[in-house]
Length: 448
Ligand code: GLY
Image 1 (tube, rainbow, N blue to C red):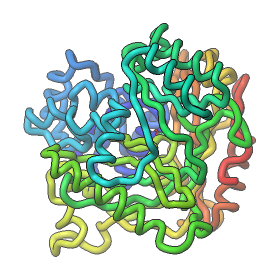
Image 2: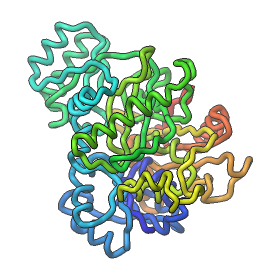
Image 3: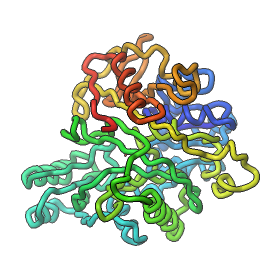
């Protein structure tokens, strides 16, 4: 089948790479894509489609012209704009929820209320629509304060304020000065929880679901989890939760993912796509800090290399509402069903100097040497054959005058798969040390 992926980041490069490795996939188109996708020219290509609502008609025409059997929507803003609804109405199979389901991510208060309605463990939370009421809340409660813009804020709307002045300032900036635009005019305070953060994602067709391996990302910019929050500075999978006792993965599946899928169905929301639960695993069990309606970034970069089977077929089954028969029906071979590799995977993000604040763009990148095509199966493997390899996913790059340059805050996701997490980290950091661009920085404690 031909597949169209929308988006241009590291997550979309990883999606295109993994879909292209599926036996059922013929050609993968990515709109608008990035130079990493362009480097996979034998199996994938970038297409310059307009992804704003005024371009939806053109996207549908493109799908018909190219015989696209499946559209995989990458970023949440495309979903919030109604791309999945539009294409589905045009008779095209789409992996990604419609606007109704997207509310789980597009409104943090909706997400927390949804968790409450369906008995999904979550932190105490309160939302406010006026600045005065929110400031009063800060005055009358003990810190630290977890403050979230209610709407979509490009991964930047979360602050954990340790002192009251910082909390006041965050509230004023968000609600009074519009630091996050409309997204931050309403804010949510969440109980501050301690524990281990874990990302749990599942594929679902709204009825049945397949959990993906757990991952953890590192959200703060600095080593030792210091400094401001970012979109994610690195990630790894699997996650060791043994210290919380046995069976925790099963608890996450039953009490979070299955309840959420059942809750969506009970509310009449036709949800086909990925369901992402950002969890804090506390001494009293896992709690959902947020739901997202798309693949995590950079978690996807370290989860997909651990998946075997026909990934494209699994996504198509979600889009068509046939995931149960994909998972257990006689028409799908065992070879095509998704399975999790034992190997560990780690992604180290190389970022532009200044990120997550302001940073320069257009800086030449050295040292890639074709690794963006992906040693994990698309080119020859060294070392232990199919058991280890390195791939560099592009996140914020572009080609200018024939030169690969930076074009975003998070520039590259250097990813390695190996028999152990230690070895994956060694491989990933080894590759990182051979890549260079002025101002490049990365966290040295990913996976620690
Ligand atoms: N890495 C966090 C996210 O994708 O929201």
